[in-house]
Image 1 (tube, each protein chain N blue to C red):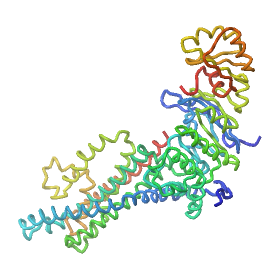
Image 2: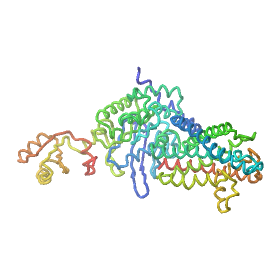
Image 3: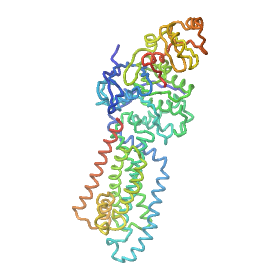
Length: 308
Length: 279
């Protein structure tokens, strides 16, 4: 493989006694879509701020586009497009003005930025809102504008911190579609998320983080293969009975997880297992057979769910 | 309409060295664009302020004073001539304060726009200089407008009166730079505004030799003037506009005091901005 665009070894960030990022190693290659999956507080955003060359590491090494962010912050940031978790748009200015001034911050010529703004308005489907004050936009529109803004300089690496948190399903799908298009153009994507479906949809490769450390690394498919079974049978017996039947269920498959509201049974064949459950005279109130997901990987690795 | 043009990529498009040399100007351009959203209000205040002051203090109180002191004048001149350099400096100070404190709070706290600027090649130092440049611009036109209103009121009666314009802007710059550094450290602005308004701005305005010579105040209160940029600028302004007596040493003292305040303010503000953005 070619040399990585981003390469970190033993990357650590401490805030006083608290270790937000605890000695992580990873490499990101050109054109790939790389994800950080983990619950809130896992250290994903802190890692992103270090890669974004705005926050300095406490120890370890990191190289971005062959440069050290501690020495060459502005030179690195010149080639990044950053979408922070919280939209930090200029509320007083219009949609167009927000894109325009941001382009100017990169030293881009006026004429180029003006042209680019038109292109980005179309990309973000905000043409009708071009003169609207940002204050008056919906959450989804603001998010799309923040992403469009990050693209004004045609960055080599686009960094998205929780890109779809707080968006409705339709807005999420529009956004995912836009991100796919960028990937097709060769833009390297860096995404943090606590949504497993988003990670599965968008990431070629990802690291699973918890409490500042990396729990596992790989493509969504390999992670699922390595840390979970092919299928999952979800059973609900009612919150008072789940625990009582758990011991009986445990002997019927490789692994089970008891959650407060349901029991998850890991198996290669969900339907067959369900038949055996009925044959054992256990009658769940509801049952569901589904494919294993990254949520199951996370549960296996940490004993906790992603969204708590 | 074609949506996606040919992608050139930031490696071709972006010149980080250009931003390194002109970043503060880009920040100032964006700030001025924002200021334009409020420009009628700012101009309204910039004009209403001197009009109200000149009517009440200049014509009202001034008329009374001029009558009672007779041809001796206040410090040898008409009261308005005496007052003008101080009012101009005060207007500059108020203007730079508004244009440094509010944008800094907005940038770090209210809308976090400084963080978005800092995700481009711009540095904390450039952001702080850009905000400051904009404040300087506002001080400039505020003072010029103030001066024009004074002239219309017939309050400009020394051929060198315009020299109070640069001294006023100097005071505004010094105070603004310091305020910007302070605002950069603020986590909770509510108490700050109460303290600033009641215990800093008000005494500075009243006790800086603005309305009467500093020496006519009790000695134990005169120190307020000594540490006030308003007093230093007013002394310089009076010296330049109508020859108010200031020893050459004191001229230097005034310049150096304001200069140190300016340089220190800019230095700390750049440092504080950089540190807070990297947190």
